[in-house]
Amino acid sequence: MKFTASAVISLFACGAVPAVADMRAVGATKDATVVYNLQQCGDTPCALINHGMEPTLSASQQNGEAVRILLGFTLPAGIGSSDSIASCQLQMQRPVQGPSEPYGLTASEALGSWDQATVNGLTSLPTGKVLGSVQATGNERPNAIDVTDACKDAASGGSDGSFSLWVDTSGPAVMFPSMKTGAASMLRVFTK
Image 1 (cartoon, helix red, strand yellow):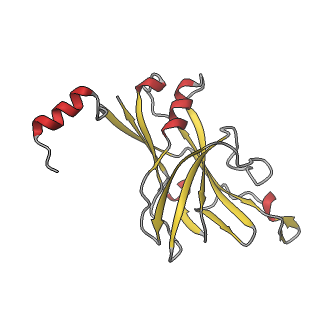
Image 2 (cartoon, one colour; image 1 turned 180 degrees about the vertical axis):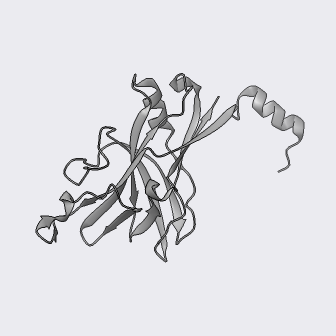
Image 3 (spheres, rainbow, N blue to C red; image 1 turned 90 degrees about the vertical axis):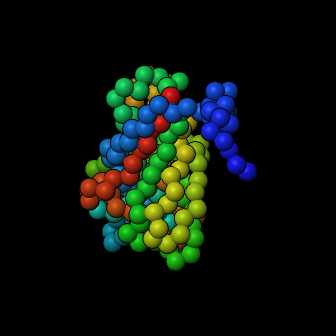
């Protein structure tokens, strides 16, 4: 199907295609790997160990263990209200280690109040609604995940625009660089 310039302009004019005035990107303000299992790591339960200051972020669902990525963001300055947000996307970096088979990545809402230096499997529980998912392969950079609802909630929540996201995978371990490497996970905010 071919679209002429006048057909595309007509689509914009009638609102069939949302107009996007601006795109702003911000990096994660905090990130951590959080482990949920009943295993021991020496004398300490593995779930009690903090992984918030490490150079990589890991996610996996295997062998009765859930490992999740917890990300914190603050909306860019100048986002006046949730009505000004057309869409929001979470963009993970290229994995430093990925499974050989395809895997899914899912982003969910998380509680925003957590400390990167102390968060662990008992201080931050994986709660919140699922926002979006994508399929990824090996060490290729995953497509962006739609997290618009979380951005709109943060813009209308009367807070400073801060919010958090869980990132889960559907299978074997995948590792991403953390913000400590200078390659933070990114939030792209498209405004109207």
